Length: 357
Image (cartoon, rainbow, N blue to C red; front, side, top):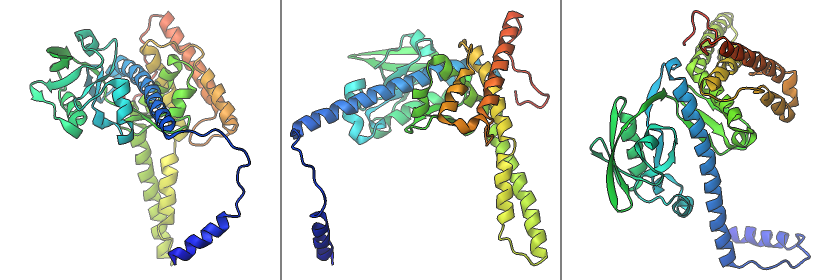
């Protein structure tokens, strides 16, 4: 049977149209060399994007830690080993970052505790507070776990730099306890899930400057700080309970809904107040960016540019407010922030009595 299928495929393919020009031949060596170059280029660009996001997120999280109920200790450095990269990208990682089997500094906040203590890019981590970092495929995870385990006070890091070994006592700083990541997607989007924040690469390319990126960082951080994800889950639960009561009542009358109304109620509940949550994240998030020292002037222009990609958002409210409302809300918030600065008042959003802040 397989031979018959192969023969039939060969006959069909023999009738396909073919190119009519003779282009230049490309050698295997040339293809391999360009493969290497492109992998290194991809990694270098993505590393720059990640470093940019981590730097701005670190500043926003540190500036607003007093408003966060979930906190973490940060030294402003990230450690990776070659095993943190996919197999086909490890050679590029070694070429771009010089990584090896030992975890080393691949990102450093120039204003953070680690940089101030003297750590440098490329420094290899040997031990944290006397605990040796694991070697091999678990090296990076081991390093990050040991650093995360220290919640207070000073951390003693044993570092190898070239042929020399140093020790550094680094006093970490408290930041909002929500890590930031980048996902491989061209979508101009970012989301918070209550525990972390994820940016799509499309968003990283869309924002014009660091001030605009800080606006989106503040918005997503606000979702987590304000408990919007938990509130949506609570609303979904209430919607499901209401729908279940209707399912039960209909079942008593001989109508079997199969739980469809409970499911619909859960979906409706999850979406309840979603536009309001987004507006609140816009409002609080702009304060977060301003408190971190970023320029929020003309921040609302972001939503005019977004309307170009999604013109229906100008008039249509979905899970998010219209781009018109978001533009006007940010403009009003920006003016409110400017007035507070001029009056010498604390940069704090106006809160209701039941605010999680």
